[in-house]
Image 1: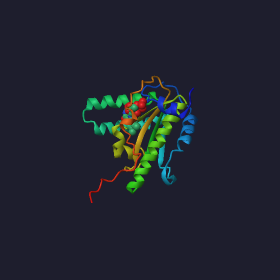
Image 2: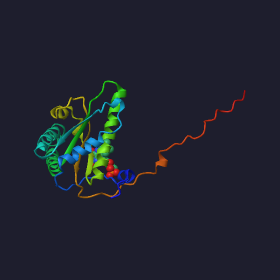
Image 3: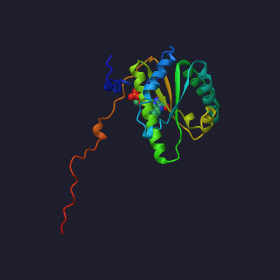
Image 4: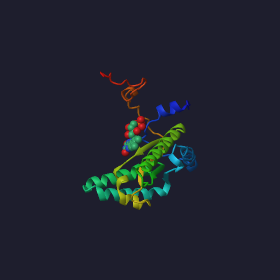
Length: 198
Ligand SMILES: Cc1cc2nc3c(=O)[nH]c(=O)nc-3n(C[C@H](O)[C@H](O)[C@H](O)COP(=O)(O)O)c2cc1C
């Protein structure tokens, strides 16, 4: 396997179809131990992780379903969504709810959210390097304060993502990215002052 960091970054794909095989808990804990080396200002290590596996998934499913029932007023659609999430979570071995406390200052909130995103990308890359796939999800229920409270969080805590992890059953082709030249502005000379007429 080509395990250069460049190869891992470029070849990683979001995985949405998983094999049902169990993943040993120590594999995920090892991934998290390495992911914690994400840059974070003042070493606040602002992330928190809740891991759901086996029978522990029931708690997650129950509260997601309750959130769907509260927010989806079309009963038929709500029932379909509830069954879909039940199957999805049952069929994938590991689920991580990654959260961050909402700091009082805008600067700290910004830094802590950004650091937690770096932590999540580390989880995605480390998983990929071990042959595991991840989908980072931001479904509507993560914005539901009642859901957050039901999960043992403060209503003001931010869920940065719900990560679903397992062995990939299907690896999609990459969705092309624009050349970075479209996003890059290079300043390599001193800006000239307007010529003065006086
Ligand atoms: C902050 C964030 C939120 C995302 N939320 C979702 C989501 O709710 N559902 C989903 O299927 N994919 C989600 N994704 C995955 C993106 O859709 C995926 O990264 C994108 O399609 C590019 O595919 P790739 O990761 O394979 O390169 C999310 C990714 C990020 C970074």
